Length: 216
Image (cartoon, rainbow, N blue to C red; front, side, top):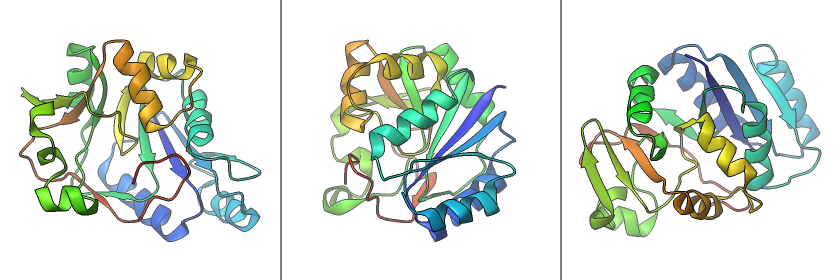
């Protein structure tokens, strides 16, 4: 099982520490592990190297370059692996993550660009609906073991096949959620989540995202 871990961070030390502890507890070993640091902060660079420089290969952007460049750096580094586990630095995992059945779902359903984990509602619209999938329920479909949508390719924690990474990297548009979504929809992809639409969240968003180009 050749899966690379790519963690995107922009300077939130406490969030990143908590997130990586949760990954260590809830995932099997990865074939390769990368951290992309978009903080532009030399003190954060040093802390990352001292704390994670053994198990992770760390890429430091000399200045803050935004979501698109950070994602490109991580995906290019991991592009030879069969799958990439893409992780933001402000999520923890509510349960053990078994990658093998997730890979089986992606292999059996090649129209899926990703298999993500559901997070708790975020923002006033989702909170009012009580669930992120309840905002536009007609845009979601349940299948055996997973559900899918055409709404958006999410940069929340997810498993992405190598071929999808290649399609996204070949597109000249920026690597932001809306741009990657448009690129992949044009290629006939949909966006999957593990489990059913009525399942409880499998991950917890522990911090506000503030990297350039990410949706609220």
